[in-house]
Picture 1 (cartoon, rainbow, N blue to C red):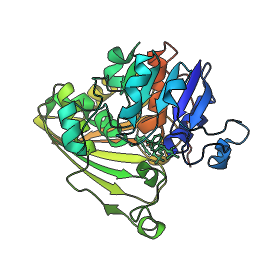
Picture 2: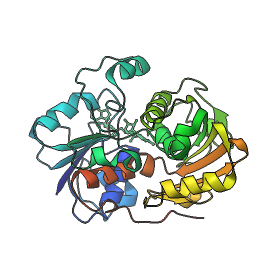
Picture 3: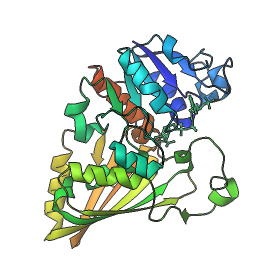
Length: 328
Ligand SMILES: NC(=O)c1ccc[n+]([C@@H]2O[C@H](COP(=O)([O-])OP(=O)(O)OC[C@H]3O[C@@H](n4cnc5c(N)ncnc54)[C@H](OP(=O)(O)O)[C@@H]3O)[C@@H](O)[C@H]2O)c1
C-alpha cells in the first residue's frame, strides 16, 4: 500500500516515517517539505539513515498517486488539501486541528474561517472505533486531548467537574524555534502557559460530552524540560463518592480489551517512543485522581494516526506499533 506524508520534515512527519518502517504493508512513496524539496529525508532525520532513500518533494496534491495520505501540516494548511484528496478516493488521516471540532467551534477557537469543512470521525480508537473502521477520512486528535480523554473517560458520566493539569515535553510545539521553546526558557525550568485558554480545551469538552458527561471542564498546561511526553493529572469531582475498589474496577474493565491502554503507574519514560497510554486512578471519595502518560509524538500524534489508518484500511490495529517504551 502506497503512503504519502505531507509535512514529512516536521516532528510528526519524522515519527510517521520511523514507525511506518515497521508496518507490514505500508510503503512511503511520497514525502514533502516545501523548504527542503530535493534534499534527502535523512538530512533532517539522521536517525532514519538506512531506513529511507526518499527525497523531499514539493507537495503536488493533484498529481499524488497513493492509497493513504497523512497530513502532518499546521492547521489551516490541512483544509486546503483534505477535500481534494478525499474526492479522488484517497484515504486521509489529518494530524492537524482542522477537522477535529464542529465548524463554528473551530472557527471561534482558532480565529479563522474554515474554507472546506466536512464532518469527520474523531480519531481516538478506544472511544470512536466503530466510526473509524472503514472511514475515508479521520481527524487525528490533539496530543493533550488524547491523554486527558483517556484519563477521564471511564468516569466521565459520573463527574460534575473535571480539571486537567498537564505537563508536556517541548516537541509538542513542532520544530519551529520560538522564545518559549528556547533552551534557557525550557532547560532547568517548569512553567505554565495558556493557563485557562489553551485551544485543546475545546476538544476535551467535546469528548466529555460525547461520553455522556455534563461535567464542567478546565485545563492548564505546563512546559517541562523533556523532549517527549505528556503527563496529565485529571481531578475528577464526582456527583456521588466512590471508593478505591470501585474506581479501579471501572478503569480496568473499561480498558480491558485495549492493547494500547495499560493500567499501571504512569510515567513519561515508560511510554516514550511507544503508542501506549499508561493510566492509573486513586480515589479519596468525592475526588478521584486519574493520571495518564503518553508520548505526544506517538499516541499523541503519529502512532495514533497509524492506529487509525489500520482501522480505516482493515489492517491489524497494532500493525507497526508493537514496541515498548524506552525506560530508563
Ligand atoms: N508535535 C506534536 O506533538 C503534535 C501532536 C499532535 C498533533 N500535531 C499536529 O501535527 C501537525 C504537524 O505537527 P509538527 O509538530 O510535526 O509540526 P512541524 O514540526 O512544525 O512540521 C510541520 C510540517 O508541515 C510542513 N508545512 C508547513 N506548512 C505547510 C503547508 N502550507 N503546506 C504543506 N506543508 C507545510 C513543514 O514543512 P515545509 O514548511 O518545509 O513544507 C513541516 O514538514 C500540526 O498540525 C500539529 O498541530 C503535533
